[in-house]
Image 1 (cartoon, rainbow, N blue to C red):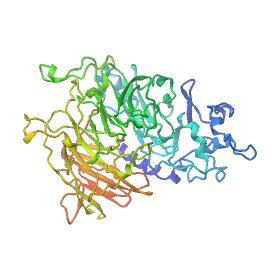
Image 2: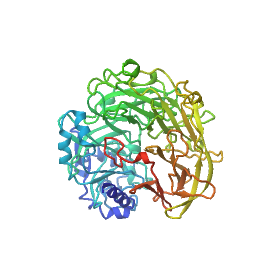
Image 3: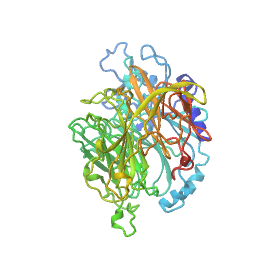
Image 4: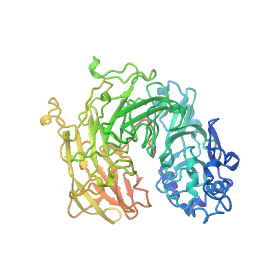
Amino acid sequence: MLAAVLWASISIVASAQVLDLSVPNYQQRNIKMAEPELNRLQAFSIANAGSPETAGSLAHALTDHAEPLAGAVSWQQRLEYLRGSSALEGELRPRPSILGEITAAQGVVVQGARYLASVANRLEGNNAYSAFVTQRAQRRAQLYVPGRDGFLHAFDARSAAETFAFIPSSVLPHLRHSTTQQYRAGDYRMGRPAVADVYDGQQWRTILVSSVGAGGSGLFALDITNPDAIELLWELDEHSSELATQQIKLGYSFAQPSIARLHHGGWAVVSGNGYQAQGSEQGAAALYVIDALKGTLIKSLEVQSDLARSNGLSAPRLADYDGDGVADYAYAGDVHGNLWRFDLLGDGAYGPEASASGVGYYGAKSGSRSGFKVSYAGKPLFTATTAQGVRQPITAAPSLVAHPTGKGYLVIVGTGQDFELPDAIDPQQLTHSLYGIWDRHTAGQSTGASTVSREQLALQNITQTTLGVSQDSGESSAARVISNHTVQWHTNFDASAPIQQRGWVLDLQADGAATGEMLVDNMRSLGSMLLVQTQVSSGSATQHWLYALNPTTGGATAHQALAMESATASLLSAIAFTPAAPGRGVLLAEREQSFVVQGRDTQVPIAAPPQAIGRQSWRRISND
């Protein structure tokens, strides 16, 4: 039922005109900002804006100090415009909706508890989560949506009525610009929020964490346990005292942070430092481990690229390889194409070679943070380059699947970048790729320097572009055929022989032409199938492709995943589609026995492999 609520809500927020009908009068809107001295929320209002003569105040930020006083729009009028007043539209920027554009946003629905009670209780050694499940069983469903204007919005998931909005502090200095004729939609697009239930030592709480995005450098966290009494937990930006002693500061980030229980004994937010950050000008980057409830820095894990130009760490993917609810490793790429692994191990961790049973140990579930460090002696696990040796930026979070040999995991990562960086090669001029990299040492053991090269990978390729016809709707679409070459993990396919290949690569080019096709969205893994969405931009138009791949080879799946027919091919592995709305990308809806991909002119069922049926983890299946 909740999935149906989610899709209904997202279809509503795709239309600004419909949303306006569900937004209160601008004077009654529940818009909040931080009150920094007390670390709590306060109304976004004239009364709380301070003096226009005080640098750093909201009133000062909304005042156009270059305009002559006579006939100038006042800061009070700009604030009311931002709240939704249409009185000065025309003199200020005309807008089709009092809400900023949110068609490209990815919302999160929050209703009941999010985990399996038995595992959460065992994790914290008490029955507090069972009580939390009961308490939150009737929690009102709320949809949290990041806007492209720097606002986080909350809507009642059933009525689509706006109930709350939050403006991060690092966005406030830029708000005056969004009232001007020069403003462009999306100038302050926010990152996608992450939501989790976390334990504070006495009770469970539901929190939301998000990057500020293009509106400023920073992260923020809200306590959303009660959707009608949301509280501010913390904010961090490049000027925060918490980061004053850190060499690498927070930059601009669009990635979704991760929230997880770690081996030091508490819950943490794990995030890359972002882009164009102070301290990253010569190739450095950092993974931040932050206390989820206090916003204090637990540890900064710093890496150094071999390229002396602006860098930044992208979205991390956390790995809990023994399924006990505690994260053991983190993986993240940077804009230089490096794929890094970070140990998040507990006290006393050891590898299989140190155990009589041959089974490794990830360490104590409570203790110190001494096991948090950069893996592989501070060197990348892999560096992505084109066949000609040109670096390929990594901005989307990796995906993880068990290795087919039973030893280690495949780290699947794609390259692409949809924002500009100084001194960087135009990403639309590159051939981008998908990679599957074998991480062999994932059982708690220590690691030395070892970087996989492109030459160690099996090559897959797009062999044919043809026309496919949907078996469901009869609509036609461009489609692709992908090779399925065998990966020779060991010499002569003998498991006792030396390692032969360390993964696979699929270059995103058809007919040998580089079109700038890239991956900037997270992948979905369904058992023995990987769903990958890519995009190709040409001027103002963007075309998307959806691939259904075998994650262990990077090639075609063994079953017919896409319900498409072609006169020239028996098995199609990718389809082209136009988004249902600008910036929306692919919509994946769930049916009883399959999924369906929906575009503006395309609807194609996707058959999941048999082993994908059933629960995939101890956390409840959700759309976030």
